[in-house]
Amino acid sequence: MSQAVLERFRRVVPAVDHCSLRLVHEEHDLLTVRRDVLQPVRRTVDRGAMITVHHAGGVGYGATCDLSEAGLRHAAEQARAWAAYSAGRAVVDFSALAMPAAGGRWACPVERSVSGRSLVDLVGVLQDASRRLHPDERIVDWTASLWSTRSRTTLATADGAVVEQELELLSPDASVVASHGGEVQRRSWGGGRGASQQGGLEILDDLDFGAVVDRIPIEALQLLSAPDCPSGNMHLLLAPSQMMLQIHESVGHPLELDRILGDERNYAGTSFVTMDMFGSYRYGSELLNITFDPTVPREFASYGFDDEGAVAERQHLIRRGVLERPLGGSISQARAGLSGVANARAQSWNRPPIDRMANLNLEPGDSSLEQLIARVERGVFMRTNCSWSIDDSRNKFQFGCELGRIIEDGELKGLVRNPNYRGISATFWRSLVGIGDRSTVGVFGTPFCGKGEPNQIIRVGHASPAALFEAVEVFGGAS
Image 1: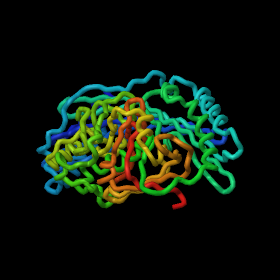
Image 2: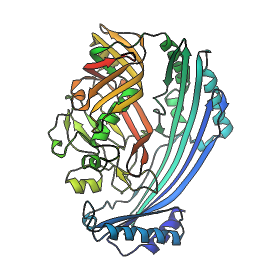
Image 3: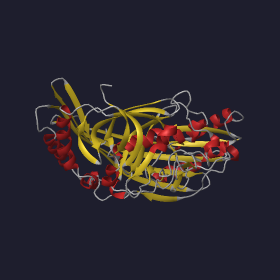
Image 4: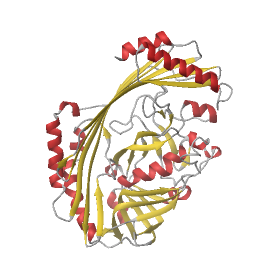
């Protein structure tokens, strides 16, 4: 199918400075068992193409799900017309841009494709998990789910470059709600599809899905009688399941170059980061090393090329605490005069690429989890995000977690419920005093990162070790 569409595209290419086609085919299957009852099975197939035109300094897009020659011709005409309208009014001279021209193929590794298992088998896995999630009548709601995606993308330029990419993704989920005596507590796997990775059913084995569904109801029941989290300034040890959210909100979004340039100000806000900070600003302590790395096998947002065709490479955004480069694709780099990364990404065929996170990771250090805990006289170890709030400049934040454990005199103590903390991005990362080694690293991802007008929901990945911060404002749900 893709070859036939490419041939049609080449027959309808208009006489312009630059023209490209991005063809996307995605299949989604969602299976959910709630309270031991199979919910309606959902399957969607989404296929279409976006034609992009740069001409006379302007840019235009034309999207269509009609992949016939007539449909593609109409989309190309629309794109050229919009390019003419925007000529002289665009944020940059698009005709002067040297767009990526690499070709190639990339596919994520898959050992056991979901498509190779019958629906009966997959439902059976979830039904077994559902029964194990309900060991006690105080568990009043419980859910097990598998969301699988198969994606094929072809990007072609009028001058003959072709990029083909193929992904298979799995977003498993499990959650319980416990209630007793007026107290309600929730435990989940990664805070809502946080265990998302690339690959097939081997992900369930690698992440020990069976142990997860046995553990989280027990923790939810224990939280019902746990004391509230203490309040005060103290050490904060964050597990990878919470570091995912911390990195995402207070590093990822502030470093998006189109946001820094003002593109998101009317919708998702701006950033406390300014253009003059790159190369000199101390974002965090010397322990802070953040990389943009779409090349990590199995991480949720890995790819070989972005949606403009730029080759994906591992790059440091922050090195030893100093801010080096933004999350900006080819167009934003030209606008800002800054080096960026291959992160121009689109939700689907009917959206243009914009600056997005992909895999944004905190590099590990050399401390074991036990060594991090041993350094703490008084603090809280928090896992799994359950609430988040951050201001329009992605600076002042307040986050809550599902579960906490007290640390006293270098030892891990009992559970506390409703743990929260707050801080300011511009200073929080400077309080980083300990980084876990590779044995503490967790690889997480989310399908739900929203941004852009019109809105785009996209997949991102975050890998992180455990991380220790000092003098953080911690408080409980009753505070």
